Image (cartoon, rainbow, N blue to C red; front, side):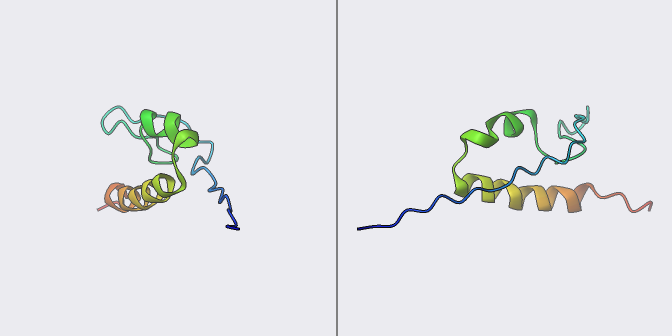
Length: 66
């Protein structure tokens, strides 16, 4: 008998929902409209991959006032 577990990954949404005109990404969660809309239909692996992508986007888009 195999035991199945369902891991629920919390959405990266932080309630700051505004899409940047230039990048097409949300200012709050760094996802595109398609990624936001598709979040609940993604597999756990797809969600984890997107979270890793979001981390990279945050670093790349960080403005340190240079």
